[in-house]
Structures are given as C-alpha cells and as structure tokens.
Amino acid sequence: MDDFLKEAIDITKAQASVRVLTEDEIATMIEKLYRSLQEFSGEAKGLAKATDMNPKDAIKERSITCLECGKGMKLLTAKHLLSHGLTPKEYREKYGYKENAPLVCKSLQRTRKNKMKEIRLWERKIPSNT
Image (cartoon, rainbow, N blue to C red):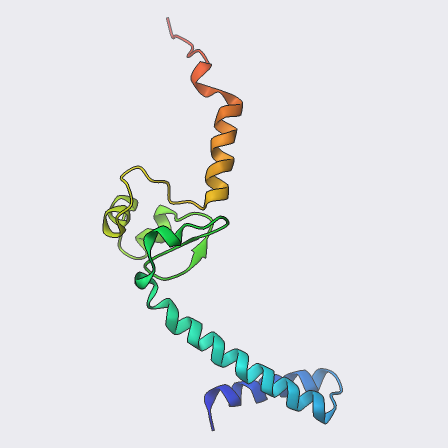
C-alpha cells in the first residue's frame, strides 16, 4: 500500500476516534488527505531545486525565498545562511546580488526606508565628550 494512503487512513482513523464520521465523510477525507500529502511531497521535492529560481524572482513583496533551501521568509538572516555554510556576502556573490543589496522582502525594505526618513538620523548631533 502507498505510504501516502497509509498516512491518510491513519489521520482519518484518528479523526474518527474523536468524532462520528459518515462513510462519505471518511471516503472524502481519505481522498483529500491523500492528494494533499502527494502535493506536499511534490512541493518538498521542488524545494531541493530552489537554485533553479531566478535570484530576481526570489525577492517578492511579502517574502524572500532562500535560494539554497527554498524556504520563504521576511529576511534572510546571517544565522539562516550560516546553516547553509554561507555568509551574507558569499550568498550575494553566489547568486549575483549587488554587494550591498538587502536580503529582505520589498515591504520590509520599504518600511525600514520610511522609518529612517521619519527619524532623520543624519540630522542629529553627536554629543561630544569634551
């Protein structure tokens, strides 16, 4: 028996132990879970091919996709990149980003830019220690 079908049946059994299900509900649930598990598995295999993605397409409005693992997040942290054995500088070089390109989604980049304009940090005087 297919592993996905076994998983779908096990999940349905667990659900049936908690509440009463009709035969139609059981059949429908198994079928939907089976398809969902297959699709999820296909997506998981697709993550391994994250390097096939165009680096320009990786930066979206609300997420940035790590081109190493395919995981989507708001920003690529140094800690995350270290899990792939890369520094942010090496990651930028590897995928052809500019040296100072921020590894964040567009909305977060815009929010940060607006915040900097709002606080006008460049106009503040630095206190002298004399």
